[in-house]
Image (cartoon, rainbow, N blue to C red; front, side, top):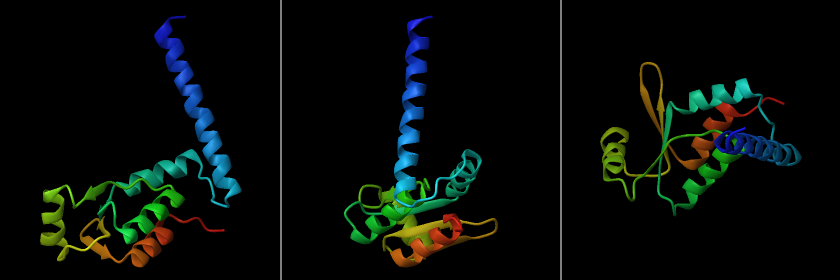
Length: 130
């Protein structure tokens, strides 16, 4: 077997073990683990969201933690270093406040401010029913 194939196989096995380890930690922490198809759906729906943030904002960090806990990948735009993101936030969202979650719905775009409101929305959309 060729060396690149062996390396690729090792990487796949390593990623599989890593995922199993993370899933085990999530289960021990009481965080439900989704099936692959469910997680794929979450990832697809997460692409309709964008989080505007500042990396040092404590309220943004609360949202980061919720996203990690819920295992929802959401594109992020740092308004400190990205002037276009900052301008878009002000022009379309109406204010330069973070965190702000842009929600792309079928017919409209919604701008959700306040970390508690964003976390409640994420829990409602991506949390699992017990």
